[in-house]
Length: 270
Ligand code: BGC
Image (cartoon, rainbow, N blue to C red; front, side, top):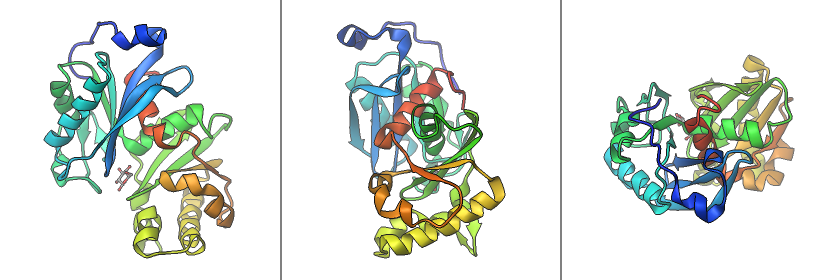
């Protein structure tokens, strides 16, 4: 969703990087522990320069998070449009759920709130896993796959994104799907592995159970596994017993930022 007038101003960093303004976007990824942002080369999906991270304020109220987002945007002197992810269902710019973030987000018009903190420029707000899915599908593991790609992010919860031939079905919440009497994310989020000190073998069994349920219902051509634990993919992806191929995310910790930047340009509408 876009709010406020389009910011026409040139972006000062363009001169430093020499990249055409039209080829760049800005994404902010709001997570449970960190708020991360950066300038994105929209043609390659790579960050231009370093990403900037600030710890997520606690409690992670809308006001506090909006101030953090502004600090990140200001850090880069970015004056253009901004895409922002939230770990929430987001419809028409309004956050509808808040599973792993302050409950005050529920019902908050995030689009309007961020626009107000960012001087009225255009902002696009979307679910964090949807942003990662858009980015991985375009630049990462999904780019050569025709058909249905499902990205799952394993972290504090499980986020999901379903894309068919590059088009996103927004706000799927497969992490909350019940699998054998328990929510998928209560079985197989990476937080569960840590909290219960599960081995990769024990945890992979739970992940397989979740993937098997999803593939029986959606028949994807490819799963992409994201989240921090995808960095150790070789330790657990070979242990999975489901039938659909599973590839680790390739953009790793920048997928949310890149997807948010893409969404902000409407090149890939959420
Ligand atoms: C939320 C999703 C989010 C995921 C990852 C889940 O608990 O319901 O909206 O994408 O966590 O942050």
